[in-house]
Length: 376
Image (cartoon, rainbow, N blue to C red; front, side, top):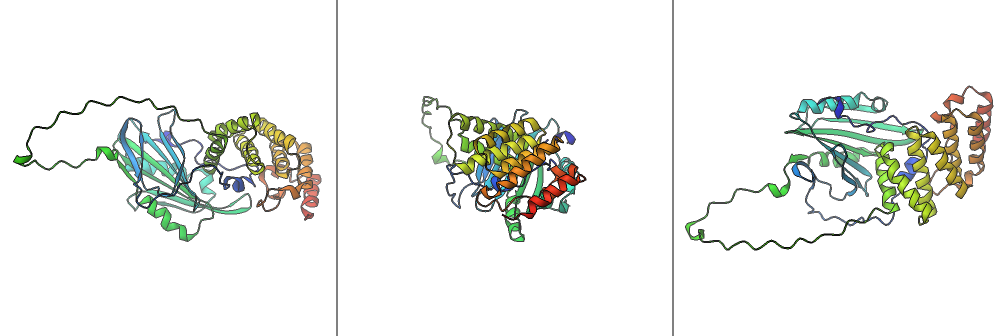
């Protein structure tokens, strides 16, 4: 296995204004099925449509957010556990040569050397267990305490690699057992239907003529699945954003945005969530003009919501437009009382990396100090 196996976007560096993104990604969109799962539910099996070797993993109590085969042929599944907030993503990849434990270690070391990991705490590459793992913790994100635990694991068999990523914000030591319980269930194996024990030898009395097989039943063509609605699309985008895969999150967010423009259905909180997260995904991937346009559309419809103005100020700052950034910041703080419930106050621009380029500007510093000094 070579460095080409590393997935783009899995361990991206976090930049730009994102104070409220964590809050909005934790919102559970209503209308998505969260049926209780029985304790006797069989392990989830992740495989390609043509079967072959796949991954068995116990995801009891999880709901699938994304389940697909990517255009490059890799198998991808992302699931979240509503009760605990634990996210699991799985990527299966077939390679032309034999997959190996050495290849898994190369992959984990590539991730370990990424700048987003080296900025974390408690980084540990464990090679002594049955499955090699890399773990680290992100304690703070943009000045907000998140305590996000990340564990990467990799297993190999035949010509298949399985890359697994577990992550959870607000992690405590009490969550360690849940992480380990999932890792212990990982198995690469053929589909369950293909694992059949050999039949016992028949006794002489059982050696009788078998009846002719029944004729095959007429195939019934099932209707195509309904396309995802805007709430499901919002959930898909949020699931990708939680994994820092902002480039891939744009498509479901953008589709939900277009549906909502054509026929508004989301309540105010979810609509704000959609605008914030779509603009954030554009900003995180360097599409600043698109981010600016999204925030401006949000402001046109909801002109007194402060976080649209704040994130627009961040976007202007990334464009190195000091005057418009200051103007948007002033507007954001003027409407600070109109934040959504639970947002926890306005962010501090002096601690925001988007505005660091302006820190030597005395006019900007004085303006920010005056804005943050006002508590109401």
